Length: 188
Image (cartoon, rainbow, N blue to C red; front, side, top):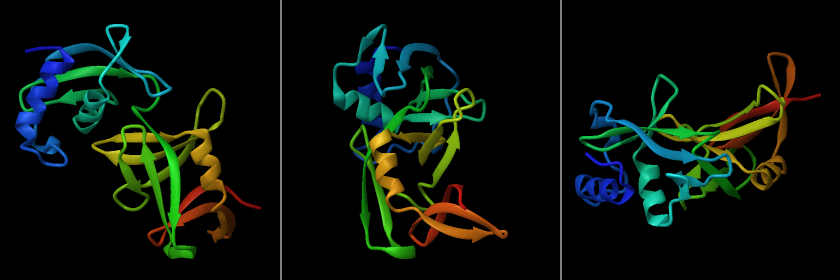
């Protein structure tokens, strides 16, 4: 058992058999312990006080990251499960593109680990707010309970595609992607 990022990366690469995404939903090891790994609010992965130096390891770790029902984040391999600390969200969505228009447009967001996600049933968009400041907290679902927070620039880009709809007799602001409406706030 190891808390070394390089060793964990090798273990995952062997188990995934070169698949795009490891079969994380099938891996159910017991908790190995707490790893000295923290993901800061600005998206930095920090191991033992130092940023992880290899971007490839961060990308790989993003594929084995899972948020469980207890609200905690874990790096999971076939035989190990390490709890890590996340200050806000583990991933950031920094660039937004839109294909098409109207209700059938497709909104795509690219994360800080290079993954492009299409807002839709598999990757829903949700805009909550921070309890302390009430500032918007826009996130897109990634997988296994993990979300990516839209950085300010991506959120402003998203705002350019907002439309107003009436839901339950009330005006609501939101965006369409893949024919689904994602509420962003109150209209009117």
